[in-house]
Image (cartoon, rainbow, N blue to C red):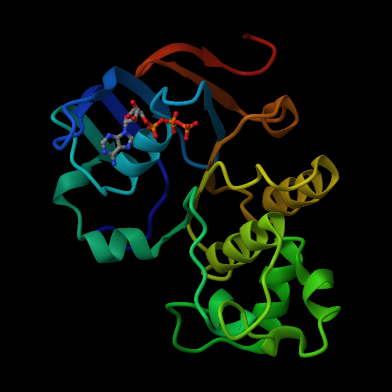
Length: 231
Ligand code: ATP
């Protein structure tokens, strides 16, 4: 068990094959993320970026090689305790037919309006929400309104941020957000995640230019890693 996750992640010669398809999605992947780093993972479609995030979240176990978190083997950690400390925004946004408020507060027992507002502001979706007549009580889904793709992504980001996570993983969740809004979110992240690890799977150069480390994947292999000026 990790009482407090520091967010030091190390992969050593990790291979991963999806059991159902036999596709080898990661090949001999080694890298280290230090606590507090802002890391961008880039690469073409199908290069293994989501797989990398899924392994960090321990949705799957590596076939061989070793993944350690703060020096401890990932597969020996208490999964609930570990995941509860990570703000994970998956590529596929998942929203419920419920109010915006409950969608943001999902999985948490006690949430104040102030916390909801702060998370929405940091995810740059607050102004969209208060423009709705019922504001945070607005229903989504079948019985409610439909959000735009970018709004959905930002509600999903707010859901991750309200946990005040010790580490953040964004799987390509800024794709439907315009560059100005993206910049606003990244600025907020650099403030709220200061000293904590953030891992962003990204496409645009604008997302990654301030990264401490950029990992470039190609066909499941790391072909380059370094910062923007080194690459
Ligand atoms: P994208 O940018 O399109 O999201 P990606 O870089 O995130 O792509 P992955 O989703 O990690 O790439 O996919 C890597 C490889 O693993 C691909 O060949 C893909 O088809 C395969 N793959 C991904 N998810 C699964 C799964 N759940 N089951 C089987 N194979 C999968």
